[in-house]
Amino acid sequence: MKKFIISIFTIVLFFSCKNEPQHLLKIEGKLLPITSEITSNKNIENFVKPYREKIEKEMSNILSYTPINLTREDGKLESTLGNLMADMCYQEANPIFNKKTGKNIDFALFNFGGVRASIPKGNITMQHAFNLMPFENQLVVVELSSKKIKELVTYLITKKKAHPISKQVSLVFTNNGYNFKINDKPLNDSKTYFVLTSDYLQHGGDHMDFFKNPINLYKINYKLRNAIIDYFKETDTIRAKLDGRFHTK
Image (cartoon, rainbow, N blue to C red; front, side, top):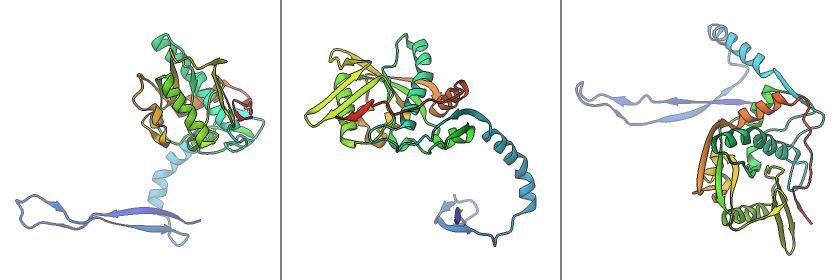
């Protein structure tokens, strides 16, 4: 498979007078294929080698173990990897949020597209964590009205995808409507709810507009990927499963 790099050339600068300001007139870019015909530069290889070896060693560190393949597509409206991702972020982030505010997160929600790679049966390494979440997304907690929560539920039902939802939520979709509960309780219109998500989604990523303009926004200075890594380090064997937290009846 060919790989490509983008080389940007910014060459066309003209100087009409030594004392006059310079102006960028043109930018061009083109793809340069990397093939076996290109020979490596030994000096660059020697310079990069110790850094490459250090990163490869860190990425191969074993963090945990899974007895099953974890994917985002092994269920219809939920998945083993999606459930795991939401649950472990909730578990790691809630103590931080509680210490900061004295309150607890009600549940966690992320997007299907944010689950970037599967984890095969066997040892889970640092590389798997980076493959699962290669972005620098931060975890945030949004305080939402019950009206916004209803918009969230409508979004989930409309999209019909296995978005990662933590186990505090039960959503059963029927032809006549839906049954939605948080911690086994129906939605209370007089309450507000604290939902854990990413800063990307809070800004309306993946059209999750219900996260925009919350009652309150709490930044907990904790990366989503770091929550995943911390959970793996603390958990010898991963026990993820499909438990029907979001299903049709």
